[in-house]
Image 1 (cartoon, rainbow, N blue to C red):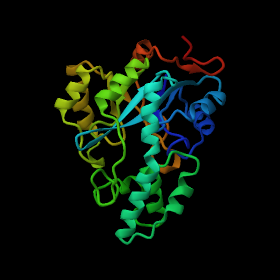
Image 2: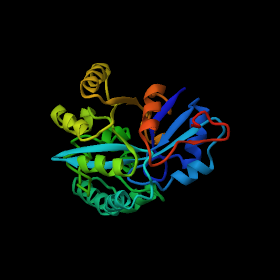
Image 3: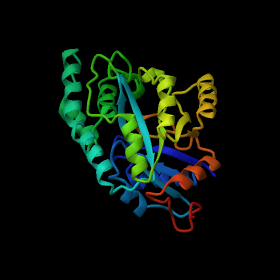
Image 4: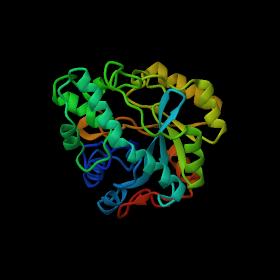
Length: 288
């Protein structure tokens, strides 16, 4: 079983529609894929409606969090999407995305970058506007070569020259809310230092004690030694370890299924979840 538990569609900042995403996941040989758009479940029904035979969809979202000065992303799986408290927090984050992106545009223009809000809005389309859309505009303008190159202190990285803050969840509150909604939490790319400051291990231990289920270990932003260190830390803290592509379509070079999750870990995630169930396509392998 090839399982990818972190992908994005046009409902947030990916370039594949939800229907295209599940079709491409099946074509890539995946058996299970999770759709984890930023702070929204807006693309899930489209993905379910287009789900091909043999592919199982894990419903989820990637929640924007902050602890102190460190920005974090919390992957939330199989929670009840109608839970009012968790939906209210997601809505607060989404409502802050437009003014935040506009502030980043203003800062970039002050740095003599000829970017416009109209350009960013065109790139975002119907998606939930975010930093990757601003980064894509920088690529269009030739300011940086790739979207990843924009996520540095020089540009849009945490604390960078054109960075702007937005409403974000406290990660301990995120864990509480997702658990209350029957879901499972995995901290995304916890040691991706090139994105900015990372969470100290003491805080990761505190999150584990507060009910965090796992950490994303196999990820394009973690090198070999980092993955080995994170696996050891996960063993010490009793955390699950996942692997995922963090696929954004053509916005990043990573391919669907480039990093995957062990089937036993996936099974444990589904066993812990009570808010929702994986959705199998006709004859899908994820039926339980």
